Length: 294
Ligand SMILES: Nc1ncnc2c1ncn2[C@@H]1O[C@H](COP(=O)(O)OP(=O)(O)OP(=O)(O)O)[C@@H](O)[C@H]1O
Image 1: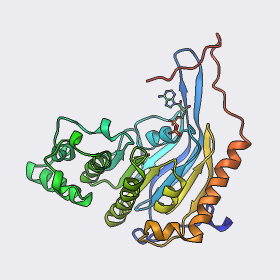
Image 2: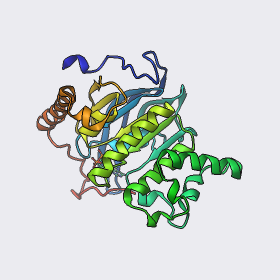
Image 3: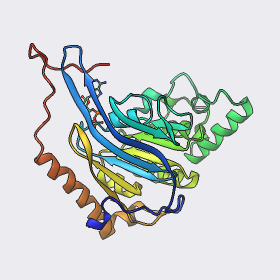
């Protein structure tokens, strides 16, 4: 399916074909230096962009620098080189209208706060009434209004991740970044969370960038899938997913086109992995192993 790869403008209803660029990264690179003098090259050279309202998934082999890339894109980590812009301005800190959802919901929620208070957290510029209204609206979107006064530890993993998503949505972001958000939940819950995320993103016209290991998840959710090479990573291909919305998991996964996309992306990753030798970190003079810095 070569015509699906890079260059074709996606056509998502929420944005229209000529949607404006929201996030743009040009030639960004990132290495980590360790106290013992070794250097881990994580991102080699990445250029990508995301349009307003677009849903993009990033996939790549384990350890290729996906999380590092996400952290750079939202201003949590400074790239060593290259340029990053969000809404036309250089990124130096996390922009106000960008929200991030991480894999580890149990570390991102406050166990001593109720579900409501967790979602209201971060809305302190608003009046109490506005905070309540925002939290309730966001919790309605994730179907959690019946546990609003519960505490996170009283909820299942999938419900806790829904609270984390509600907290992100309550800030009314224009861009939602998600780093492996469904990796820690069971398969059935994962499907429900994926479907819910697709609806929220479409209904709110949210630009969404999803980091995932799961090719099926990427193809099911995204308008475009960016495939990364092993580290130091670069963009191997961009695959435009030409499947109409709304998408229903069972129907989409039964489509021959879905199978073709997943095969294409799988083959791109495997082919590149098998012809790329493992990157060895620059060794320290005394030959010690690199340590992961905090
Ligand atoms: N804070 C850090 N200090 C040192 N090295 C780091 C740090 N963060 C990441 N790395 C290294 O950078 C490389 C890329 O890591 P990263 O977590 O970004 O990859 P990933 O693709 O998200 O991994 P995974 O597939 O396991 O989720 C790895 O070799 C990792 O050990």
